Image (cartoon, rainbow, N blue to C red):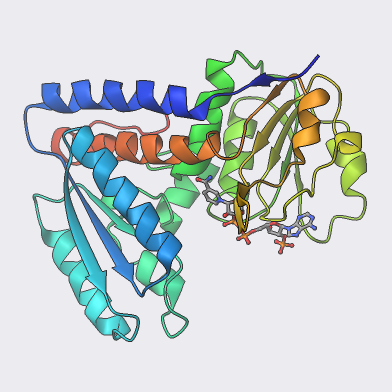
Length: 285
Ligand code: NAP
């Protein structure tokens, strides 16, 4: 029997509507500022979608775009202004930055209270300590999908492929916090299939189409495909679509994790407004 499709578009729409209601009830404007440097077409599309989604949820947004040859100091100066601006709740620096910029230096200059991407070391550290403030939106979206489809995480074997700071590591931390037994695999993992075949929950976040084949998946497992690669035939994930015949639940690409990332970014922005203005925590809840 084919896997149940975990519909990220439907759940994201539900979350966005909920955020819109909560923003209206908040009673004060909520504002997200984005910074984009360079002319990477995919980044322009992503930032455009974030602004559309913000507007739909009643979140104001500020769109700062710089040419690729902008000096790092100019971007740092803008971040400093946005950090100090009482009206701005969330700041997002779209990655990748051009090669002449020190990416960690730029992302770490964002005030941790406004760091709706959850990339700042203080936010990463809080997640590690089990006291999350802002958590990266993509792994949060995966957790929301698993919850929506009733996947029992306590005691399960969870395998995450990928160990980036944006997806793999925070994903593993969230699964661990939900009492899963977590294995993190990466490019130096000796026998990837031996790990993935044990997984009740398998999350692939690599960026290599077809990396996960049906033979690597435990029958009935929940398989979440975070990977996105642009090909001539459109966007493809890390998981071979034939895995639908083996898994119990699976996300499609597109229409799985992608829409969830944007929905969780909006939720993070509202959480940042609440946190800063009312002293209320916590995103990720
Ligand atoms: P990344 O920083 O390039 O990390 C990729 C990870 O995959 C690394 O940890 C790498 O291992 C590991 N890896 C590479 N080849 C491997 C292999 N053959 N076997 C096992 N592991 C391997 O990428 P990222 O930023 O985490 O993003 C991962 C994917 O998710 C990309 O396709 C990206 O486009 C997508 N993504 C999607 C969303 C969304 O909203 N849908 C959001 C963010 C990212 P090493 O650490 O050893 O190099």
